[in-house]
Image 1 (cartoon, rainbow, N blue to C red):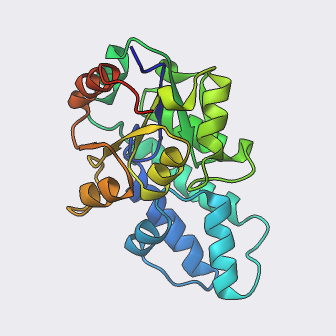
Image 2 (spheres, one colour):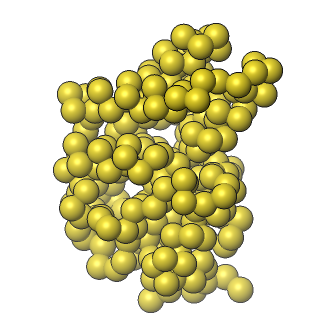
Length: 226
């Protein structure tokens, strides 16, 4: 067996939250003088840490956003979770079927990750092995969060498989030799998503979480390159 750890992204992989998050992000940015649509947020910031997204916007605006900007987005997002958030279809069964260590490595803030997983009924399956970009110096697409998760779980990077729905996430994981399964089954995904994930370095792309246990088993039966 060559796989010691499965690392899940959260938004768009475990919880079908990207549409909700993008709507809250777009409304908040527009209110602060950066007009953008939810689709624009999705295209520009999918998989990017909140810290990095803020830096990009402030550079373009030529000024700082309010100190409580992230808190505004968080309040708007969490306010919608209880009513609108669902788990990705079949992901709970897929997690239960994986007979190996698993964890979460998300660009979101810890409270947002915890609340999202709880609303979707997944927190108990994954806690306490839940890691956030706020715990590292650089968020995705840098590899810091993936390395931190592997270190905390005592797994070598080349023996990890990452489940990601974003190009920054795939890029970060591949930068440290982790193998990636690109998931394009979230409600936010477009027909181009699979090709974009593959181009970024995902070894396999898939759109149904019922495929995941079999794909992990295939990876485990394949010798690690090098």
